[in-house]
Image (cartoon, rainbow, N blue to C red; front, side, top):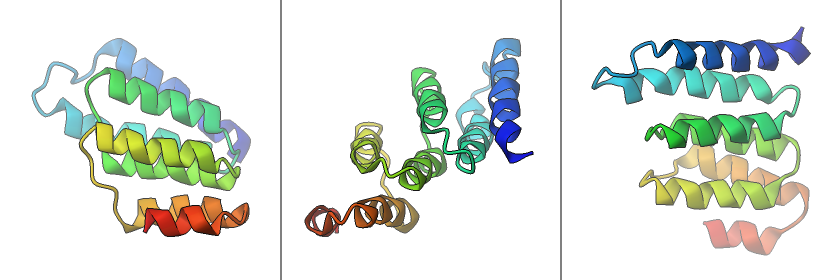
Length: 125
């Protein structure tokens, strides 16, 4: 079911990393973007935000960073009302030299809206 989907995704990503599949490839960053993003997205239905943040951390530790993975993580945080962490991820994107897009901002603003932090939502805009 949905509750085990995130577990399977995290396990599969760990296995791929352990095997080192494609890690030495110069295009590895782009190729790894899809597994990282899919793993984070799998965490959303079960609101497994801690695991989603661990995946983002693993992605960043390997020198990779991509907008879809950050956006997926902000979405997981939004689903659980973790607006402070969402804003932290937006800052993390800037530190990784990534530009947030409309989807990223939308998820961050939705998390602020849930807790009625309208002034912070306006600040994001």
